[in-house]
Length: 254
Image (cartoon, rainbow, N blue to C red; front, side, top):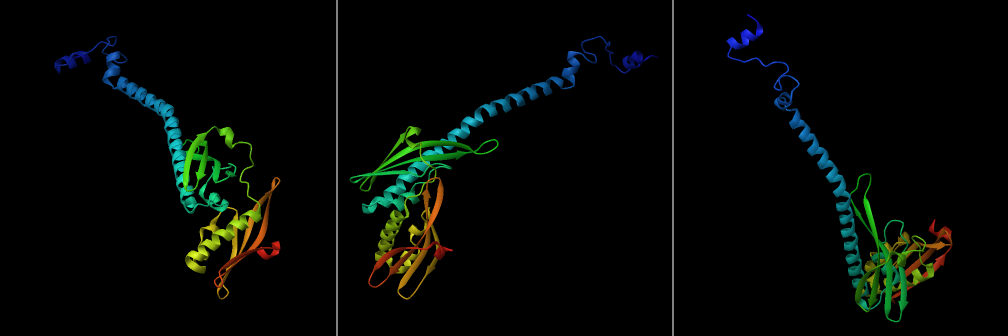
């Protein structure tokens, strides 16, 4: 009995090799799941392409949200610093955090109005690195009220990155902040005052003679395209209350 006879004896009908149901036919492909695999592969590829198209837009949206959040937080910090009616340069340096490689905030004072312009950045996820977006913001401070405006990027361009103010101006602000802390909480309040954490001020050491606090610090300042440091000593006395600054030789900050 041949193979066909054996299949018929078993109740099976042999399929001719040329039949569409035979090996290599369309039905055979369906029978083996080939078409299902092809459809699944097509869906996967389509999903990947769709993700590649949508993901950058989603990441940019996240970065923009973070930038806007930073602008709102900057406004709140400036309003808090200006609550006493005075907004110092050292307070602005701490309150405004420009984006990476961005210039220091531009500050203009006119009468009782302080205008701060800064390039802020927001970061989101990305393929090879974070997605970054930047925006130029202008903060207008009048008394303790602060308004915010998103302005063209050109308003933040054309300035040297991370420019620091002249050290004498910074020292004057340090004296003002240290004196306010002294009046509020004595030498301990001066020791932990936020002014010592201002960008551009690097504390070298603190000394505590009886009834005094002496802070030696480097003040950074841009001279042309180079960065210079100046050594300053700030002496705070408890009785009578006083704060004084003195420019020292650079070796004193070594």
